[in-house]
Amino acid sequence: MATHCNPDRIAAAAAVDEARLWSRLVEFGEIGAIGGGGVCRLALSDEELAARRYIAGWAHSRGHRVFVDAVANLFVRREGTDPAAAPVITGSHIDTQPQGGRFDGAYGVIAGLEALAALDEAAVQTRRPIEVVAWTNEEGVRFTPGAMGSMVFSGALALSDIAGRRGSDGVPLSGALASALAATPQATFRQTVRPIAAYVEAHIEQGPELEAKGIPIGVVEGIQGVRWFDVDVVGSGAHAGTTPLARRRDAFQDALRIVNALNEWTSDPGDVLRFTVGHVEVTPNSRNTVPARARLGIDLRHPDAGVLREKGDRIAAIAAGAARHCEVCVREVFTKAPATFDRQVIDTIETAARLLRIPSLRMPSGAFHDALFLNDLCPTGMIFIPCERGISHDPAENITAAQAAAGARVLAATLVALAD
Ligand code: HGY
Ligand code: MN
Ligand code: MN
Image (cartoon, rainbow, N blue to C red; front, side, top):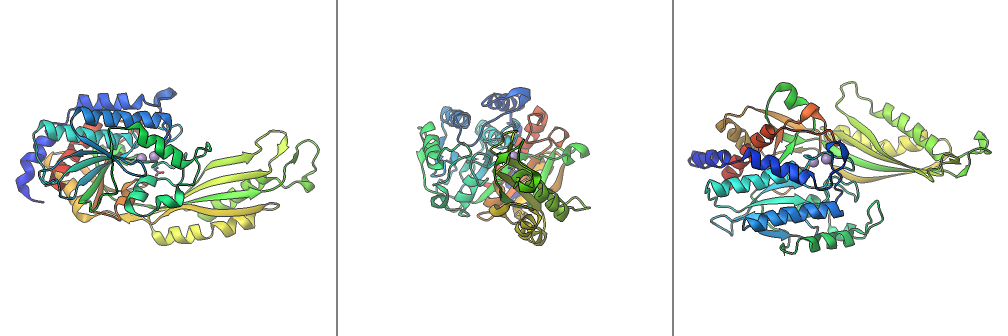
């Protein structure tokens, strides 16, 4: 990276205002707040639409243009000296888990906005435009798949193929997207932009390593692969008090057998393979009725594409073999191979941290992120900051103002370098 932009990188980083960034993070965390410091801001819900209005309102007040695309990805644009140049994009997501924290996703978007403010205040001009994006539906809780906005943006998924889907609450995706577009009338509708010069996403680590080592910045080298499966177990409803065991086709009992068999299949003494059944539905979910149906939502991850393929490909057969009385149907609803980030972007982030005298550590990401899909489109990298006890996807998720500011400083300096 050219050294002539060093003063600009340092000036932009120095203009990051820790108190302002923190107060925005706190304010943003109040949108959809639940007890215990957590947030429930499901994709395209009323709360998430309020968060979109917050971002668009901020951008408008600072004179930035706002754009939105067909899958309701929301972009805030700071012009470069060459408006025709491919933009550098930063950002993350603003939807959360049902009992999520304040920082997963939101941090990357708010840190991006802080970086734009810092560039403005340091009067740093970049050749390329810089855009801060809030990708639609990264978590995949209300609508599947997760990372929907970045998948559609990168071309991994056609919106027309999923537009007919409904959310877990029965709301059609098409209607929810229309409401999101209507929520930010100041945003100009825009077709997908090409090419993209680079993408860099700031995020909390969501794991314990940085905190344990006392290192403020993680330079992410790549993301492990992921596969999601829905397992439907179909038995027969019956009376709980009268039906002998021999006559039962209890879907939940077979679901338990399936989970046990899959636990065995995925057990890994090295604790690298990650297998989770985080979603269970039992129908009719009545204490005194033998369950007629059960659905399991499976999340499987590994950094090695071969292991992920081998372990995932046998899930349907193992599930079918473990069920004693019921029919089993397994569908894969989301899949992405492991990704390695661009060497130059990794170097640029690491150099920015060094320039700012902030210690950093190269590391992989166990969580997936929108960067996983942007990586197929343009040079991509990620900046991690520590989070308390490594906890995420829980109201207890927490960071300090100083940690937030360190990440935003490295982000600002990185954006200046990438947009030069
Ligand atoms: O599931 C993930 O890894 C992401 O946090 N949504
Ligand atoms: Mn996230
Ligand atoms: Mn998450």
